[in-house]
Image (cartoon, rainbow, N blue to C red):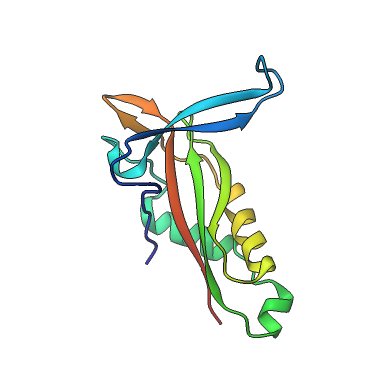
Length: 137
């Protein structure tokens, strides 16, 4: 089962994420991001949770060296689902102890199709999502 969790402290509803943007006045832009637990409508992957599980299982490729060396693990990733449903700001919160597994988890998330955006008061908002990607032999 895939668990989508809120990142950050439970008392924080909105945080700001710094984004490098060359066209911004000083090359930096701040994005207001809601935590997953605090939106009225949470962002949803196309096809819901089962669609997300199917996507991960079809897209994830076990790295060759990790597979042949019997390395397993879970990569805990964070990303933002924007107002338009695009996935951005992919980061590893806790790696699996193997760089190839970490890179593969990031690749899978970066290639995700657009999600249905989260909403607050009927308006689309950017939402931080935390998602574990498991690698088991």
